[in-house]
Length: 461
Picture 1 (cartoon, rainbow, N blue to C red):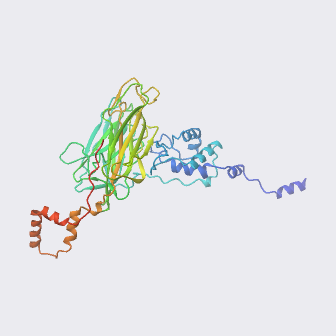
Picture 2 (picture 1 turned 60 degrees about the vertical axis):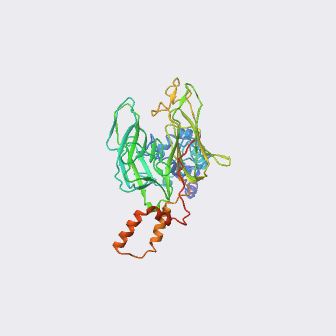
Picture 3 (picture 1 turned 135 degrees about the horizontal axis):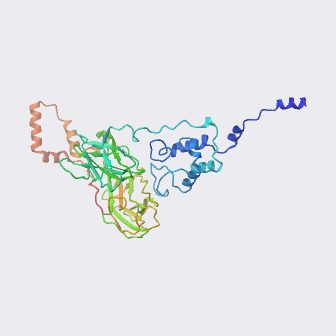
């Protein structure tokens, strides 16, 4: 007996049960799942964001494992409506196949937690504006009081940002002051001495920025920007939806600016829309289509479909001058509650003569669980129980280079370098002569110049 006890003392001690489990488990929360959740889920599933619950800890995730498995297998989370077969987009949050497999294997294994030392440090998510530190934040001029019930018509708020020079906007982020009642917001531009919204720039930009549930900030590629001319005002167009209790809101927009000398191309938001929708009662697959002919080569930057509760699917296509066709974006299951702006991973050149086509379907049947009333005709309107067919797209002129300036001005600068320094009286005389003969001078300065700016691209069919 003593000998047996002595031999037992020589055997290595058995590791604690949890250590054996952690070593043998193929996938754990700490080592494998937490990094994916931080990267793909916590953008929304953290305090102060749009998701209804947080996913910051093992307990947060393991207690919802069945739901997580269901939304992964049905491709409902992370929310992203685009068919992956068409287009590549910089803001695509979709899980990769290896990430999906890891999450599902973890759930099938019973959600093992793993070793505490394997848990990654908390992710450094932005605490302020997503676009970074803004150069200017413009709020609504005052709080708006949203009633507890009833219909709230679109609200218009005009704000003068006080721009005395042109401003070039490279990024814009609209932040709802109260997500409970703000359905969406568009910010337009209004010229001095006018009380109506105007398109702006050579391409006729429809709006500065837009925001709905799920819409990311507008961040333009390097060297591109939208212009706000000096003296122009911002017009907030707000859609509020009462939620049963009185609320207040003061939405704002944050802007980041570029130095004018750094802007090569002026970006614009264009819009294809249907002003006269007439969707019959009970119609489950009502088709709508609009097209837009490009007069100049453009770079396509982003696509943003917008519909209401009966919106079913939305597609953008390009029909090229040689007759070939390409699907640019396909959203087979449009989600009224999550409407991304699909930013292309790389600007896409579309040649002059290309026909852009937007196609959508609407479901006004009882089979649509979001349908407010399948017995009614549905027409174009601003309220959610009415409908919209809006196909926004962002473009820039492909061959534009604003850093080269206007040809006649370049010629003036080049030729003035050849003029000797003059006294102020002679300089005043020359300036007066230039003013009196500015058209002949412009012709002289542009002789031999070959660069011309493309014509605006703002025709539709």
